[in-house]
Image 1 (spheres, helix red, strand yellow):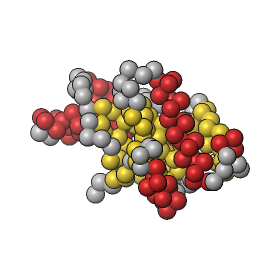
Image 2 (cartoon, one colour; image 1 turned 180 degrees about the horizontal axis):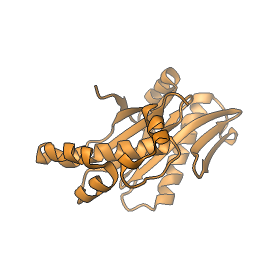
Image 3 (cartoon, helix red, strand yellow; image 1 turned 30 degrees about the vertical axis):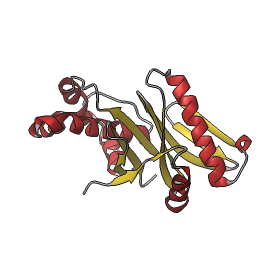
Length: 203
């Protein structure tokens, strides 16, 4: 059965997002941004939203919060002495982030329009089995299913500090074991996007 998690629009749904984080130790927030905004500007806006959320969640000044990016480790936040896991993703018009107090995680988002030529990408990165599943679906649903599998793959890789490699079926046995410890969620985002979250359950 497919699992779902809400994503909260910041700051409009800030109160609900904070309540969810306090109760679940994980939360997904997103902001809307101009479609032509530079990636660095979108990143700064998202980091500001994350800082605002953490200030409220931990009742501490912004000066005690540091959001850090490290190659091969990803993003994390230091709030006083506590380390939190963070993952971020960007698409035209939106920037989204997940925060967990307990689990390494990865997030990815794709826009459904304009539709891209996805068949070769699916064969190259998702493998023949998933490509066959997509092609067996009704034509109108194929691109959405492709984006679902694509964001799941990206989220799994991010949660393990890995980058995209050709042919998922060529991933080493050790990495397959890592993926077996990954819990996947479809995120409830605006209908023109598809987003996935991966949580590591045994790390």
